[in-house]
Length: 514
Ligand SMILES: N[C@@H](Cc1ccccc1)C(=O)O
Image 1 (cartoon, rainbow, N blue to C red):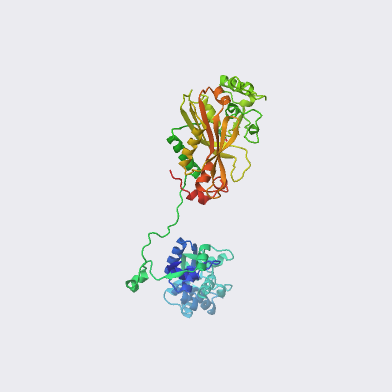
Image 2 (cartoon, rainbow, N blue to C red):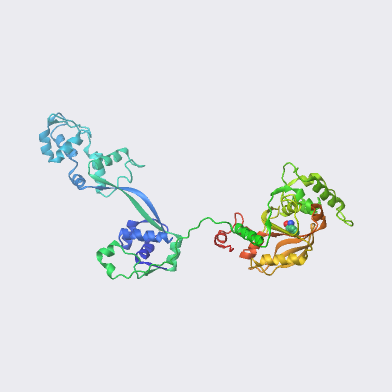
């Protein structure tokens, strides 16, 4: 890494374990404090050091304070002289004592102003008395002044006493400030510590760039700027990354899927997430004792049963289950009750929406040709693993037309997936209670090369279509949006995009192209 000299010097002088003040770094680098501060902030911008600021108060003895520290405070000198003159026994002449104390000019007023205040004695009508119990050696102001002159800070901050410091010492210091014997300075002390990145940079090696990256007041003052070679302004330098909010890639891809299907002439379906088992299962000719209907697979809700199921449709579906459809149709020889049909589950697939639309229940009776889709959430009580969550987005779709064949179904998938760059679809014969024939769809994972199941499909059977009142053919499917995403972006664990384990970099950096 190449950095301007001052930054290299500060980086090398800084510690990873101890915060060093600008002053200390200035001593160590031989650079001016302002230069160190500027370099420290630049290094902080680059993430190599952290700069912290503490407000501190310091005290400095003024010239007058220095004089008194040496000669004694005027009031103390007055007291000693008064004692020598016997003022502890009775009032003596003030003039004499002042002369003996060697006070002149303003010192006289200062001595008199502080003498009585500090309990050394009284001054009245040209005479002075001294309190024999007063102890000039213990004068708090003199003590505080002496320790400041010795370079000790009697206290560290503020005008209030700090822990471990007497009120007396704090008051004494305030008095000294008020008397102009001590100057109080409040300032911000900045400290610098290396960050992990800074340590890494040092280990990898930093070099001083020969060029100057900024004009400083010192360079202007010294004329050094005339010979300096200035670094080019680097418009490609890394700027701090700004991350705004972003629509989740799953949502973005869902939108793209919707656009694609709309482009293929489909209309969107909409409907309840919690629905009657009737729409989720019974219309689909799933026997009421079908394993996927148990609560192991679908989430059952403990809510009142659904009432508004069209009676005639209910009768036709019941009859399909019990007696079958058509002259040689066979129903299931298993029990079927309306109570079960009216129970409410979280939908395990959005084929419930297809049933609602195909039955004419949503937007009235439909005439072929028709195409509908939805990209919506479904819920299953699956065991969590890299390809299963308790909920996922299903791309539901169907085409209603005269004389449809499996070729139409395959051709539709090829056209759809091609728009997402997936051209190696494989079809496997499958079984669904509601479609015949049925196919599972597979795609190859771009990273692992594994075949991944991406959907399920088929031609709805008579037992489904006749009770719904549909006379022509309907081909249909349910595809997993998350699996499509896996093939598009190459991640191999669904939990990378969903939930607490999600891969934030993947979510931040993946571009969904429309
Ligand atoms: N409902 C099926 C998908 C599907 C829909 C329509 C016809 C065929 C299959 C599933 O969830 O897997």
